[in-house]
Image (cartoon, rainbow, N blue to C red; front, side, top):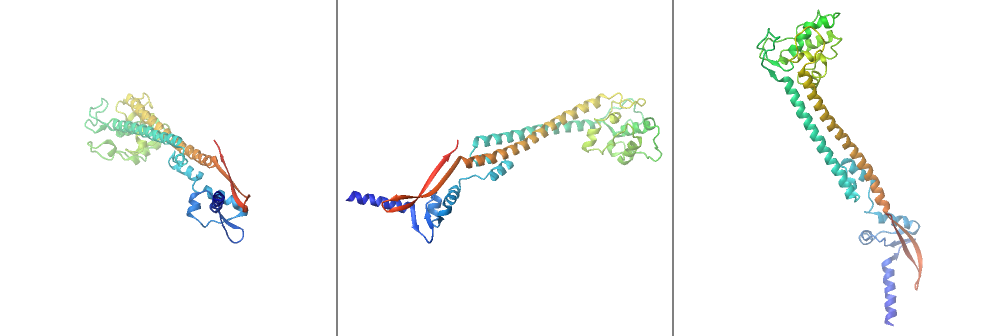
Length: 320
């Protein structure tokens, strides 16, 4: 007798645990299998007609990963989206790649800056010894590349360079007689550029003002500026020939700096690619994560000693 009573008591407890009391109409309260929903929210009532869909949505709460969020995280910080989806190894690889690229870029950017500072200082270095050709201003402040020397040579040979040029309206570009000043402080850049434009022909560029990036680039890039170097001879006009050794040395330094900057820029381009690849990978990783565990549920009836009762059937598919 006691054993039969025990069996009936177990059945009653199972029914009470699995199915809640009926409500109005066809709404019945069911347990979803999700403890957070079942025990924290006792007000979930499901219609039999769309029971499977609502159970599926309830079970997904807090477990699915947002592909858009994963992609956005990795677009901002490579590897963050992979960590969000639980793929820590791949996330670490993207992060390590990002760090290595930044270190690589910073290293070559600094080397480029160092060489740039070196060749700019080389061009602006003061020359104390009087060149053999200079007998007019023996005590003048001279530099390795000298804008006054470039101007004076160009002005002296302008009619040879361009026999058809109209130079009548030009004024002297030397605006100060103070020989203690650096050459760039004694020159009118407006008048210098007018001379360059009037010469035309071989003078394809006008010299930017001292200190600008283009100033230091042009003086070691075009033969037009060869005569500004302190080892250029004051011989009769021969455009750009011979190129001086200082011009060549300066050009090599500038080329080395540009190579370093190119490597730094290339590394930053790869950084952008790393962000994009990580974002795309994180997006699909989140989608893959969501499809790895899929629960299919349905509602059916089962015969018991007390008649038919509704029973939840669940099928879990794992994808590897």
